[in-house]
Picture 1 (cartoon, helix red, strand yellow):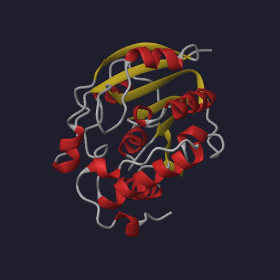
Picture 2 (cartoon, rainbow, N blue to C red):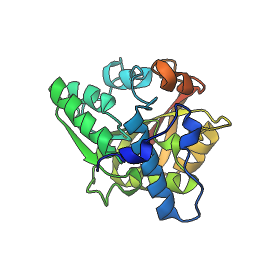
Picture 3 (tube, rainbow, N blue to C red):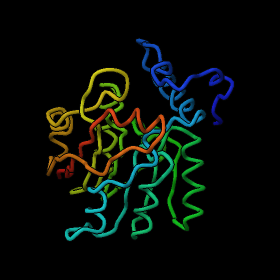
Length: 235
């Protein structure tokens, strides 16, 4: 689905002008959120792209206690940097994003890098409906969960839990809660509350390398602090 370029005409560099209006209908809310991200990609406002891969991901893949390569799911994969990195280190990767332009860019980047990744245009809150079944030994989230509504977060946990293998790891990268426009963020008590008992929190720490790109988008993202959570799927 191509971005609605006509709809993006006249937008300024201020991201607060792009915030969707509130609605009590869930279907309308989802459509509004998807439209918002299509507009972001159309105007090049993608602060979630262009930053270095997280320290936590590097540790899981290449560290002293690295996981053995297996099947990985990259939720909210954007243009595919984490997916490509995992594939280049022996993982069988499925990347999921609900923005078609992001998926198209991810496929082109993977092809250029010679990385085999299955990129799927689907919604993380309806993974199984999108044909994604698993089981996955690793799930990576580079800033997807922290931007969701309460309702979406419940669906996210349900879907992630359904496709994760027993003892799978979930690496959740998220901004801390902050006021004003932007991702709602998440804190550790909420992570533990929402994911228990299906998942157990193994560790939590600040993510020093989860830094934004330069330019307007980077200055916007620099207002937030990153945090990483590593969880394990319970049997």
